[in-house]
Amino acid sequence: MNREIVLSADLGGTNLRVAAVDRDGSILFRTKRETPRTEDAQEILCLITDEAEKCRRAVESAGKVLGIGAVVPGTVNAAEGIVLKAPNVAALNEFGIGGEIGKRLNLPCFLENDANAAAIGESWCGASKGFQNSICVTLGTGVGGGIIIDGKILRGIDGTAGEVGHICVEPFGAPCGCGSRGCVEQYSSASAVKRLAYELGEQFPDSHLLKNANLTALQIYQAGKSGDALALEVFRQQGFYLGIALAGLINTLNPEIIVIGGGAAAGWDLFLPFIENEIKSRAYREPAKRAKIVRAELGDDAGIMGAARLAFENIAVVK
Ligand SMILES: [Zn+2]
Image (cartoon, rainbow, N blue to C red; front, side, top):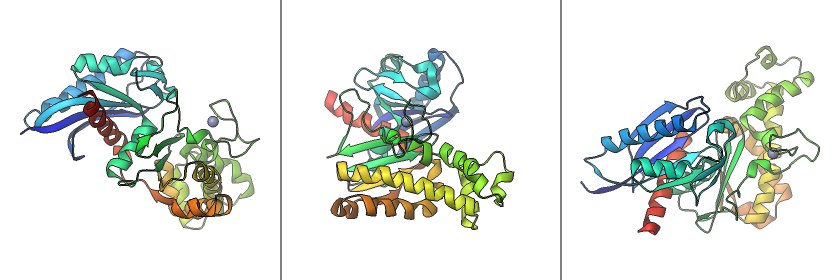
């Protein structure tokens, strides 16, 4: 067989996913390992290339492996293949991992950050497939964003564009890891949903949620579904603040579709009405009507699909 195949590696704070993907977006083989807790960049590099070799061997008879896309949870200089800052995998800070992976595998390697890769993956074969102007928002530990305009990922001059999570929605609000305060990440991420549940607990002393010291976003959602007033207030705030940020993006970028994914999208039906309400009351009417708000489709595969797509696109350019 002479199918065209790329490898893709998605390094997260918790897991490393590596796959072999063909040009139609079919995953031919995949592996998953825990991300090593280490200060040694070489250890992470070795794990990625070992898993990539496994994938390459597994698809040997199916076709030719042309390159590899790699995704890291942090800011990157994509052109140079360098990780700038990866708070959850700090060993990689300022490490030229793209070049190293490429050298070890003898393949062209293309580096991208996780939020951009998710946006590219969803627009290749997920919820925003077929749309040229999309915004992908991932509600995880933080709030990640990837913006695609006229079919191209928006990078900005330094490659840091798309940081939707650090749009300020509350000028004197909760301090944020980025150094600012009141960022939407502080109200709409999975971590924020949990924090809000405990913070707002005082106003809802009867809530059963407060008996649990280790709440998850999913448990808060389940409580909300059964009518828990504290949980419902948490999701109201999550949607309200995210809606403010999205209304601004809709006015600025006029997207066709906004895709929302990540663990804290679990509360979807409880927070969506509040997002829609803010968009309706804050954004211009035409772009607000135009922008579809939908749930992500690829789940944990968004990163590897985005990395694969990026590798196919760039290989075509290199050729
Ligand atoms: Zn921030």
